[in-house]
Length: 369
Image (cartoon, rainbow, N blue to C red; front, side, top):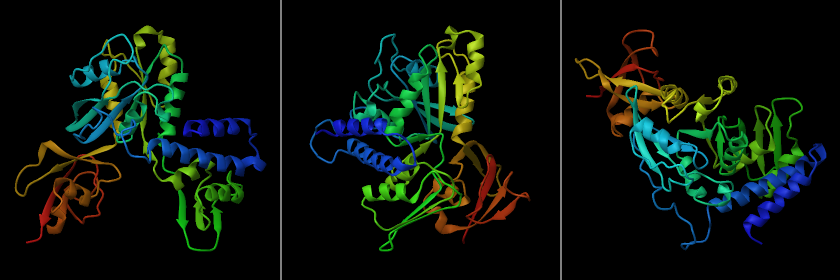
């Protein structure tokens, strides 16, 4: 029996099973099985040239400070959007599947270089290896932000389909990694504890999921209320959590009332690539979601260099990260840093390597003599 058939059988069984406390453990086991089969599709164990590999035109070098990927169905205007934003020509036509490989382009915004990738249109069933789906979504996994481009005339079901395809590949959109501590041990069985009363998961379901992964001794600690899917994500470990913006294109074809409704939805950005409406609003929103931190360098006795900032990602913006971005050997000679800006009380202030920098700080590194 093929993997696809096994996946279909499990999905059918899940659809047939009623959801209640008695079946929670069984459903948990099925979800774990499903995650394992999906992983097998993504990483075919057999060698040979049977459709494996990244595919021609998909190994795009990472250039710039952040990477943004366009994901969407064919003919929603991804290529037009890339051409208007970056000036890179991506062939656009009014028939489906015009773009067949990955086309990169660069936008310079507020001193940072942001790489935009125009990925080919994905089709339903991409997570199961249909079309160019596997390469498209594995390239999407390397992005810092995903723009899901939707056609405002096509129904909202398109959004759900794309989300479903990306979820199947282990990409979690606009979510934080679950606060679940999972530790394997040598003996003692499965211990499960939660900081909240009456959690959705009980020991029975946790044991069912763990036994599917052949884990018989582990400590599992939950800080919040989570579903079985989150536990499977933590055990699998190969999940990426990426922010996403839903870009609604072709808004010149709908009424103002409909546009007002769309504008209220979270993570939405209405645009028209053809008429260049709201493209600056889209780039501004990308900047917000990428959460980049610009740090300016200041050589001793000179003015700071405001033209070429060192761009870091929020969450990885300590003085040590800043030094490593400039040169890997810099930390060996590091003595202390002088910082001007929002992250310090005094101007300048002496800080160590663990000090967290904020946007538009100015840093001068003092080296050991």
